[in-house]
Image (cartoon, rainbow, N blue to C red; front, side, top):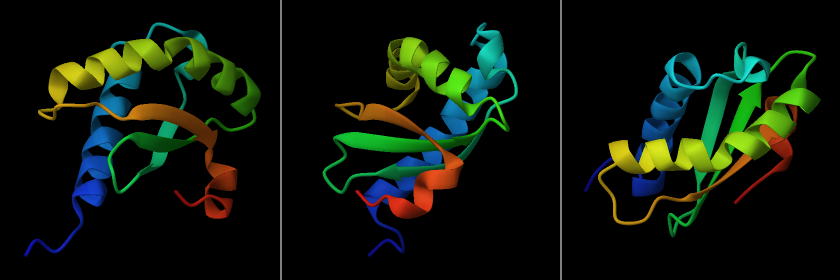
Length: 101
């Protein structure tokens, strides 16, 4: 048996890929200094909560992620080798302790 659940392994992979997408592919200036802190994937792999740190500009980052969600999910689909890519939800890192999937 593997030491981690599949959802945890997928969360780590999504965190890496989304960080790379933000660094190299996103052109929105509001997402330039955003870092991905944590990714929680549901057990059924249908949705992923991505927690980010944007400093004091988190409201602008939330708006930017709203517009970039489809682009990021498309890029994830090209890099992940899974049948269905989870639906993505973005939240500021300050509130991740209050959430559970």
